[in-house]
Image 1 (spheres, rainbow, N blue to C red):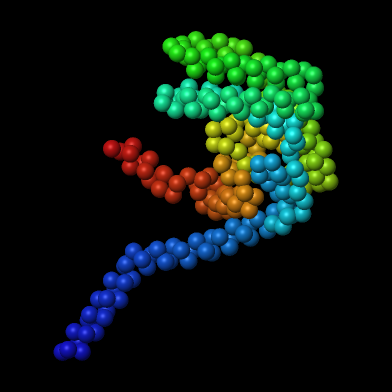
Image 2: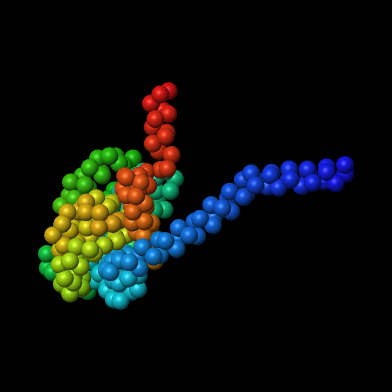
Length: 285
């Protein structure tokens, strides 16, 4: 009888272990390892991938890096940074009054340090004049905001009216600088590919979540490849700028697209696995 009870206890324990959440967690982890291997294989099948990670472009063939290029220069960095400084000053408007004085003083000191550096940069006369005008407007804005009883709304309205044309001009010049660099660095890569290879090329672009619409790089590659910005081969990784991680994200997307095609809907795994069931449930309640 005792042996029978012991056997029964062991069987019950084994059954409980089989249904333990940890068992399924381990099972899921094992499957994820196979999934990762499949993603690695997906990248190895791609003949050519260009990954843009911040200021650098990497060209991969069958998952292995073959070339690298820098995509920015000093003029580009200055022109874009100057526009960003002005936008950052605007962000101070949303901060608590208790911190404004500290931030204003820091920005004012930084801008006074920028002014003498402008004359040393290889800018065109028009670019240099605009830069000096914009910095002067920034300093004037900060000084006015620190005055007692300052009308913040009126001061910013006046500032935006004067600064916006200069900001847009700097942004346009920065775009031209980077596009010229892309034409001298990336265009030779593209021109070395056959038409068929270009049609099979994937481009992975690191971009911020909030500023990737009509991204400069998407415009450039769409123009160079004779396609549209929404071409699935122009793939954006949001807030991800590490090339290896970007490749992993692309491989996951491609693998899930392939599995979806096998299921009869290539977009199926680009929706949450529970998405369709949730929609049906909510439509009935």
